[in-house]
Length: 450
Image (cartoon, rainbow, N blue to C red; front, side, top):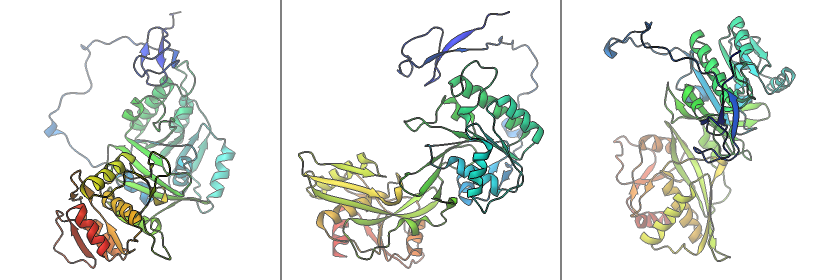
């Protein structure tokens, strides 16, 4: 019997070592090296004949990818128009955020033959969750509670489903690898087998992936390179809203997002998030403003809240929820340097309502408006909204796709929108007043005087 060849692999980054070390030299983590059996096949000579041949790129025939339309318009938007046949999609997110619920709803809504594989729950537990989604029934949804990837692919070949859902990739194990489930070698080997099956059978596959405490998908980074689509399902667990983003998409854009609301019957799609994210106030309060942002090709209006108060302790506090704290510090420095507002000795707290996190530069103008409003204790009229980026010299810079932003604000009944004077405003008439501003000083005067 041939001697088994072993190596030590880092469970954090996947680096391979011939002997055990206390610390991984690549990622710097301690006690992450585990001994695993490796199968090194002989390197083949280049003299053998290949079934493929070299072809000029001009001669390659292109065919548009066939897509399966899902009942979820938000998921179709994020995927770029539907599920591509033979694609492998990895969806990651924090525990309890709704990954399994989202995919189970998809399996129950679609009128297709679905194989739902679970390595974490029993069939009765999945059925209990399905019964909670009372409106959804699919007689062609089949459950299989198994962790062996060989058995899963064997049953999938017999059933021949339209697509497969696997929850989760970290629970699977292959008989070819002598290590526990969730290790780098197991995840890599199982993913290879599943991707090979998906491409050969032209069957789309959804994989659920756990994440680490740093928010990265657990396992080797090569997993994200191997799959076709990587989706991130996130949101604040204290709020009801969930955001589905595409971090990687070989068949579409990565800038689109889908918005869901978690209710007792599962996840509900949000068709018009602007109406939900804006609070209906009985009276005007200082520190509140409305920003017109863009997520992908979807314009949204979100509410910004700011609180500026005298610092009780020696060091002023800067706290942000849903906004980059470094960006806030930069905006406060611009206000102090360019516009003369003394905010260095004051606490500043900023919040984006609804648990939404976004990095659109068009937020800058609304953030500054909220800070100035709270600092002077003057309420901004509720029919005002803002869309503009602020530079280090205090100038208000233009933002892209301004026409969609103006149209969205007009549709929701806003009367006045503040934008940069450098934006190319379309010639057609809008039912909303467009105020063009160029500098922080001009912006402050126009908002206060209004």
